[in-house]
Length: 291
Ligand SMILES: Cc1cc2nc3c(=O)[nH]c(=O)nc-3n(C[C@H](O)[C@H](O)[C@H](O)COP(=O)(O)O)c2cc1C
Image (cartoon, rainbow, N blue to C red):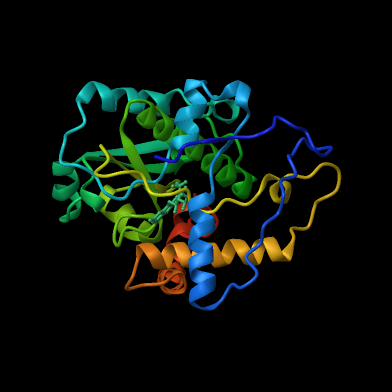
């Protein structure tokens, strides 16, 4: 598990973003660049102010990782119920709760999709944006499909993160997936048919849960705070920092998928995205459906 690194609790710019000493990876190509990028990934640690290192919730948040290998051990029903309750209690716009959760055990997943849960997960939840349920009693945004959609995505994503963190706090690891081969966002049309989703209910992410098998992977490279925060006018990111981050992403992907590459993975996404785009448009937006 990644151990947080303590840092000065300094507010070094107007936005309160610490400006950390910059080390960029000058040689980004070739084997030396690859090794340097891997070393930089391994050196990446959460930055925790010394006064807060004992905070239990921060420890859970900072140590969370996407886990892609799960033990055979089952998740008890009360533990999974608490995870779902964390989703139910998530905040949402006007308390609209514009989400639905398709909930599976390893057995019901196999019955439904005729394949095992990815990574030998023990439970799974497909989190969906849901603008259908509220419309039974309240059509809040009939003229604003994009806003209605965005609100549902935001709310359902917050519920997903609540479940993810609740699981982590209970010792259960998880990974959120958009691509699982058949059951993710990119297979929206298949999911609509299989789960008989009404119009206005659309898959966003599939969360796989289980007890971890083996240690957590290193922290994938995060952009420094001073590249993602700004105060006043938008701050254009430093190109060298972005190049460095991309080099680390590619090296990290290669190290964990020897037979594939970051670019190959992107190409897979692109190959499925056209169909997903068309399916999602008809699932999400009323235009053209006549409702
Ligand atoms: C909405 C969403 C979709 C994701 N889809 C995938 C996926 O299809 N396959 C995968 O291996 N990881 C997926 N991830 C996990 C990300 O790759 C992971 O969160 C990111 O690399 C950061 O790593 P960390 O979660 O360990 O901090 C997804 C994460 C999110 C939030």
